[in-house]
Image 1 (cartoon, rainbow, N blue to C red):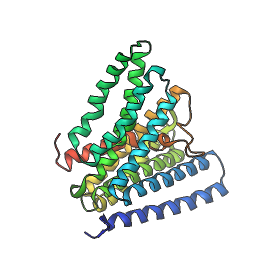
Image 2: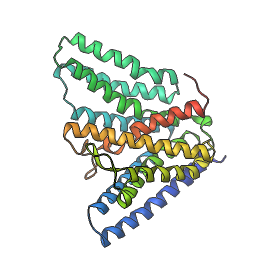
Image 3: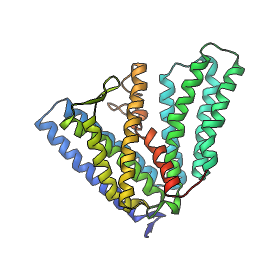
Image 4: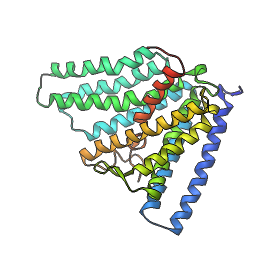
Amino acid sequence: MEIIDGLSNRVFWAIGAIYGLLIFASIMVAVLKRRSPGEATTELSRRVTSWWFMITIFTIAIVTNRIVSTVFLGLMTYLALKEYLSLIPTRRVDRLILLFAYWAIPVQFYFAHQDRYGLFLTFIPVWMFLFFPMAMTLAGKTEGFLRAVGTLSWGMMITVFALSHTAMLLAAGDKAGPAGGAGLLLFLVALTQFNDVAQFTWGKLFGKHKITPAVSPKKTWEGFLGGLVSTAALAALAGPYLTPMPMHWSAASGAMIAIAGFLGDITISAFKRDLGVKDSGGLIPGHGGILDRVDSLTYAAPVFYHAMHFFVFGGRI
């Protein structure tokens, strides 16, 4: 295995191929917008732009030093949590407790960087989940207590805990196969973004039967299944190159990522609809915030990592 500054050549070639695909997709979208301007082509353009943003963000995270990469991923998680907390109603008495929620991010990512699976797995779902209600109880205000505990705990789970699995993939090292942990992270992110565009495209071409009309009315069974098959096919080709999995297990992983990504997407959509907002933030002008861009990863990252941990790495808790 050839290595450039500790990073497999396979990762660089895969990144180059992804950017080539993005350039081609951007040209095709520009042609479509000129020939058939409308809502569909505008939305497709938005999703391709989103793909550019996500792949660029994670390319930076992948090709830099692993410490810098982990810090970078932690910063992305901080921004996602910040957007979440800016949307939900919070109590003045809980301001100090929210500070502890932010402080939990570097601790969680430190455990991920050190590949401390047991501590990584329990820090937020056990220790922080016990700490939040205890601290709120000691604050002495019971009005809105249950809502405050529930919204903060779920926010920590869907942002900090879920997204920190990206750093755990980077920490996988030699057990991650020919391209290392960077290859696994690239495999996950590229397929998650590809699935989003594929589901939208298949849905626009053949979509008739809506899945969750009250939550995400544009999601159809035809789009979902088309995206799933397309993502599984791409995973079958990319998996043996970037992961330790043979073609058939790579395809199964691609299907799993497609399903989990879809569930993450509609879950964040339900959250935003409940609050009556279209985007989680305005960090990316015209394209929403960080949480809008990583919604699919909130489910896909933990599902993919733990499947790899137990069925590929042979790990135990």
